[in-house]
Image 1 (cartoon, one colour):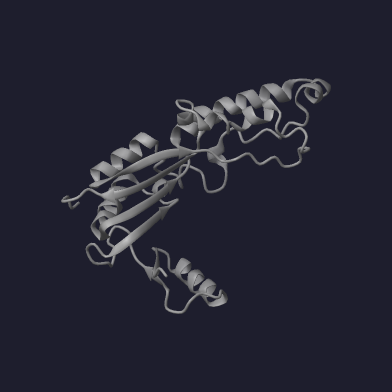
Image 2 (cartoon, helix red, strand yellow):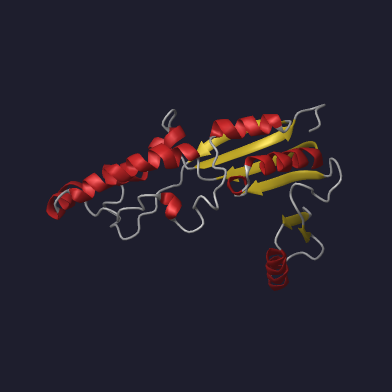
Amino acid sequence: GAYAIGVDFSAASMALCRETRARVAAAPGRAAFVQADATRLPFGDESLDIVFMLDLVEHLHIDALHCVGRELARVLAPGGRLVIHTSPNRRYFDIGYRLRWQLHRAVLALPARLRGILFGEVPPLPLKDPRSAPGAGPEMHVNEMTARSLRRFLRECGLNGKVWLACDPPVYQGISPLRRWTWIHRLLDLWPLGKHAPLRMICSPHIFAVARRVPGRMP
């Protein structure tokens, strides 16, 4: 029953969205796409009930991000919600992922027979620098956040809400079902550690937030 509006700066993205909508069985008149700059949204004050800001924070320089945050606070209706996802948590790449890589390398350095006896199959060594992966380099991720910095950003934009960290469930490709839950695989993925504070701060790559505008305060 919702009326959904997709916003993107790119004309190519708008064309792709309209092409996709034409191919799916969507309720007519329930979705629209708007090409716009998120720092100057073409919506009235207090006009939107829910805003999703997914995988955008890390791609905006901090000054632009604050402009976007103030715009989102402006367009949120009373009681409306802003839902945010950003990845990676900067501490995960700087600390947790590096520890995981060193541990993984130590396991792979053991002779193959000993590895098989102790751990079973061990996944291939991940990238030493995860920021070298396509789409994750410094030219793309110009503003990696932590949970603390995301909370500060929300406060500065006149928003208040819950911020939390989350870790991906493990994906074991090429590992036998009987061995994929051995302790070494669980440790190499950091997934169990990411469920517990304070290790969550360095073992969880994802940051989520749900925020509302502070009553009586406009950005």
